[in-house]
Image (cartoon, rainbow, N blue to C red):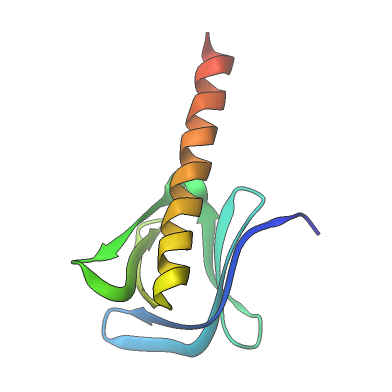
Length: 104
């Protein structure tokens, strides 16, 4: 198994008004974001290039993640939310820089 860049458990994952899990897990590893149920079943995953993530209109402890075109509301602890945003943005910037080096 590869190194995990981010791992948060106990995450409430919703797809708009439908709750998918109360104690899910969010992982960032191998250049992918994975949303998992509390039993470890995959809800959705996509390469970080296909992920958009932001705070939910400034509301604390919530992040809006667009995974391959599907929007999910993630209810995380405040520290976890900030770490997830930083991890995804850093990985995307690193991948873009590597592509830029390879393209020239």
